[in-house]
Picture 1 (tube, protein in one colour):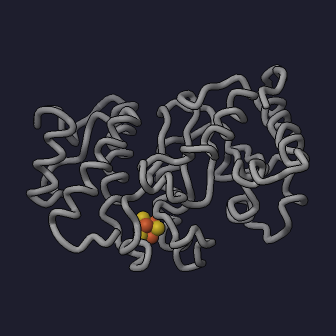
Picture 2: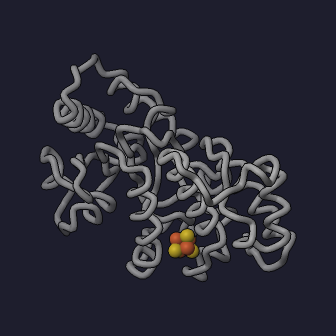
Length: 255
Ligand code: SF4
């Protein structure tokens, strides 16, 4: 959807703010960073102005504010002109600030683009089952993509788009500071490990990403499309590696 006039901006911002609230973000940066239209909508969605502050002494609240400020910056981003013109909204990420694990995908698909949340629909249900197999709920982990905008026809992001969005991803990752990272699919695994080799060579090894243990496994979309069930079984082996790395018991897989 093209965003060429103030009404479109307002529509996009309303969706973005609703996503933030769903993710538990209760504070936004000071209103002078926003246009007047955006400031009004921000106040509508987050409560009275006296809850909007930069003077946050509590470290957890400081992180929450930083994340909200970054999400707002991302929502207005137009670095990739093609994606900016075609997206419904940016898809920032969802999950608690104290999430132990971050699951990382490539870019929003059409359903994520429509909902403003990563990993929804059938692919989301598959990921939910992977998370449950580890003994967690979706609400206990952080979900995000490398790229914050849907690519046309879900094509692979270009190098330029990855470079454009890299700074956002790294800043978001550093604020969330998960203890463990799971790269979903070959594209993300290569990016996060900085190794241009097949996923098969990246699985089964504990890598590091920004000082955190990183496990590489299949993307839930690929698992869903696999008629042989091999990828699901391989993914469970990868998740068991994650659990061993975390020092957690191995529960029975949920499917
Ligand atoms: S993909 Fe990232 S860098 Fe590109 S327009 Fe979207 S938010 Fe901006």
